[in-house]
Length: 102
Image (tube, rainbow, N blue to C red):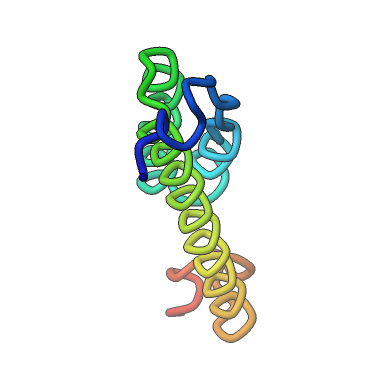
């Protein structure tokens, strides 16, 4: 029953959003490794859809979104840790760690 053709009687489903822009944004602004994983999955979506592998295309789209959002969260946590370090220890404002040690 999970087979696409059994559910939709041969109709072609809507193409899933490949989430490529979200993955690129994550890569550039937040978390490079997880953003790249998102880009890899996002680029698979169109190929899978065009070859008729609709369920695999939807899974790849979901994976691209999942890894991109995880990257955004990891990046936000990293920024929060950095801000706390700057506030508590003054890193960056006093010339970095070298200025802190003097």
